[in-house]
Image (cartoon, rainbow, N blue to C red; front, side):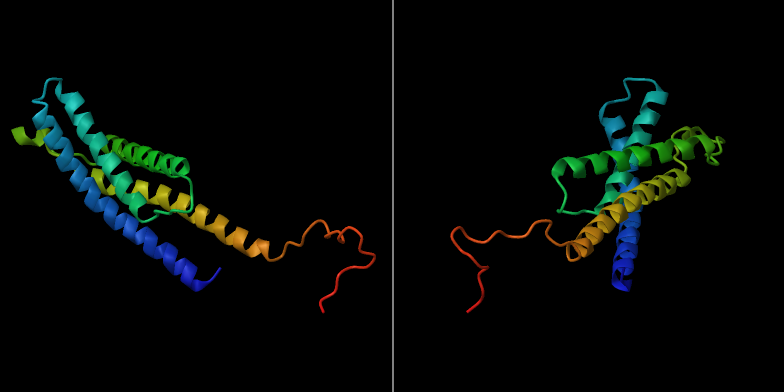
Length: 169
């Protein structure tokens, strides 16, 4: 494995993290806009969870942007997107349950979102996307290096009617 491969992986990871941070805030705003457009027909807990899921899915999409590859089938790529988004949503709920939270000293603090939720979603999504992406790249490198070492299992048969193997003239 060369230094350029490791630098590429590091660059992809950092790009995925940057996209995930930005997209988590975009997901926060999108969740709020969705809740406003739906005019809050359900309880506050449902709308808060909608916002958390929007943050996680958006962070997962952002984390995947650093590891886009056209080598794999669309079903495998879609599965990767779903796994990374699910991990980011799990990170959002983990940060919400175990994070510092928002001090509820004002009325608006019920609707405030703790920024550790965005960061945790981005980190979780980036870690899972990086693990999957590095595994994919390692498989590609292994396959490329092992093909040169393999020899054919069978030898070519001589043409029908030839008594001796053909030679180059």
